[in-house]
Image 1 (cartoon, rainbow, N blue to C red):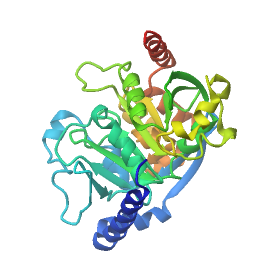
Image 2: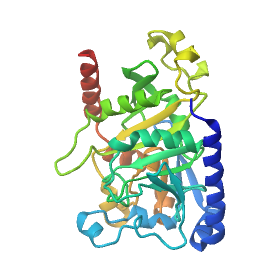
Image 3: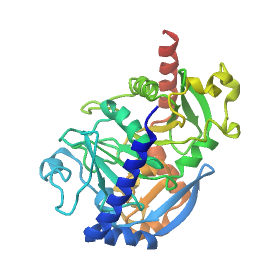
Length: 350
């Protein structure tokens, strides 16, 4: 079991960091206070509620140029930080920083201490630890061609729970079991907002193993370093303990096994949603005239929080537009089903 006092200490240090950066850094103070006046709309994709936010300060991220030439032409902003920006050391590997262009209050950026390309596979376990230690935060990862504005420097982001519709929407989704461990289940989500897989686990190392099994079945396009994907992870102590939330209890081989606390490595559960991708941006991003919509999906959009830096898009976007955007950047149903087939086939050989 992990020492809860260490978790509480980190959370307190993060709260102090947020307060101090708001006090000491005018950019953070201005943009944090502006969050209170941001306009929002509430829409639905396939009966799942989503949020549309008008946030003009996010234009830097939405319109960021991430091609090789553009990256080489600018200094890495994680290696060359503003003088006002300071952070918290995390396990001698990451720095926890306040994002000066927040989507919500408490928006953190968590870069690796050394310059290394964005890649999830070696650091998924760190993502689980961060979700555990930060408490009440969702930690998310934008792939190098899936919304990362700094694909040349490995980093996570985090925001307080209660901001991403995925936190509730996954509970209503139709699920099918793809892989089972002793304390871990990997699901495929059917007829969801976007093509997605759901990993629920109380065992950090088993969760890491299950993620790597899924990763191994995802396509890596020619010239890319990893499969295109977005990932969001958080802790949820109620999901497995509340029987009303069990959608697939008939599929469990031994229901009592999950209720025996001796088998639990941690009293809470990690929830990870993995969104395999096939495109960086939807066709509307490149369209001209009235057809243009400047939405460039990253993890928060895949998770149901859509950021529009232009007011014209905020006013006109429909549920159908958002559904089309997610469909165009996500893998197809056929591709998702092929991943499921390969996962099940691989498991049956063991």
